[in-house]
Image 1 (spheres, rainbow, N blue to C red):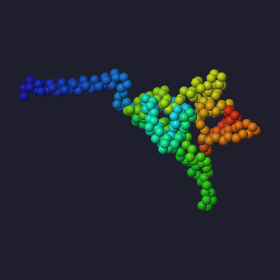
Image 2: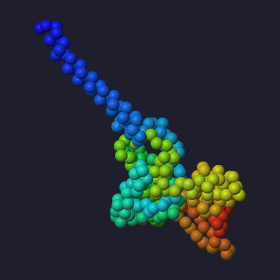
Image 3: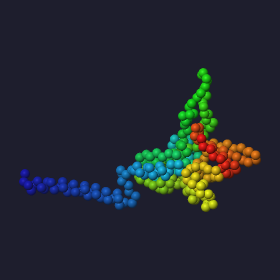
Image 4: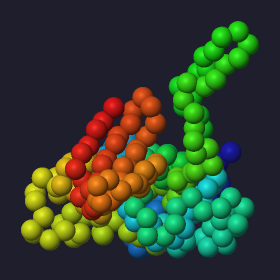
Length: 267
């Protein structure tokens, strides 16, 4: 075949390949130049996950909406919009676990491809601890070592933060802003909640989620969230109340005289 004809037939292939390269380059530039555009394969890095766990696990917030019992909880978009339809359906089906205005604690974070799931107050499913399954007795008669006196009480739930695609790298502050429709974190920042007259040791205890003598009820709620149980009585004309966190073998007892913590015991 003559050399001229061979070159004529190959020319369209070179032009076609060039057009594909131009299209690919244009799409790549569009991804970086269009505001808000996120590459399809972008996902959260390991470093970001570590930062979110460090910055949000054990963080205290105040609920703005009711949180339901059950395994699903509520869903909030990355734009901060609560899915009210699904939330109301969960509340009707499973009941209320946490009422609005209650301090809660983020106890666990689970990362999914298109969502971040926050466990609130150890979650909405109530399960037995290992020591609650131990029974002792003689012959065929046995009884549990630890009796669960409130089997129906569930104070936990879930909040799922959803994204339109894969979860990108986000900061702790961005997550708090997205969850702002359902949780108020600012009210329980010591620099916002307390005035300068509050002793520094109490502010430091709240930051570390600890309870110390001298705190009032609001400070304890900021540090530890709502108790699992309360025992109230009047002794020598003074109203005293015990707040109990956890179950054996790890229990925290907080004793109030009026509105002040007078004793803290950790077992």
